[in-house]
Length: 240
Image 1 (cartoon, rainbow, N blue to C red):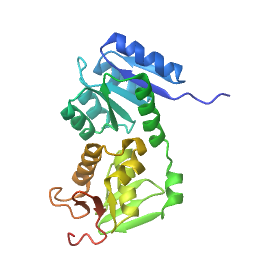
Image 2 (spheres, rainbow, N blue to C red; image 1 turned 135 degrees about the vertical axis):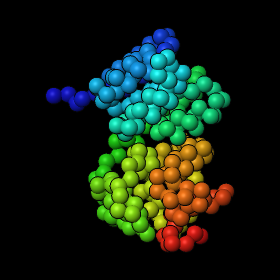
Image 3 (cartoon, one colour; image 1 turned 180 degrees about the horizontal axis):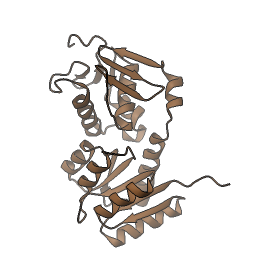
Image 4 (cartoon, rainbow, N blue to C red; image 1 turned 120 degrees about the horizontal axis):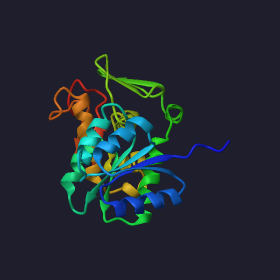
């Protein structure tokens, strides 16, 4: 029996671009679902559970932001948002709503396929692989990370994280008490091709802080070392 193909949903209201993206994904060996508006995309994600979603920002009925926000209520499926060139606010908003990556229009087929492979590669890293590399569990202050279960607890309550947020926190806790540079975090969590994408890292750090910290503006756990990187405070009873 042949292995099940990876399924990708691509959603865009531009029929020409939708055909182009779909055809090239199929040529690269993926099964492809298509949607011409946000409502159709949301229904297909709920019904078919694709392995990856390509989501245009500007779509009728529901825009890409609304779809991303709703999907994150029930699924951690990797999402790549498609944005207009130079519109950094769209990129930041999409990432802040839970998207894993972004692709700027117009893009080449090679760039599209490279981003798809990169996001899928990150998503396929298993809990077993992580547990082999790390201790099974670590507790720092009120924060507990169970690597084997991919579970994060704060003050006894479970914290729901996206796969990217979890990998970021896992790497920081593995290096608790040590400064980790921005580029090292980007390379470990996203891949070497993302070195220099500091805003991608900043948005996800801010999301983590909002989920973990009592006061995200004055974090006790995830400390910023300006111009260098970040540090997971090994003694969160006092800021460093």
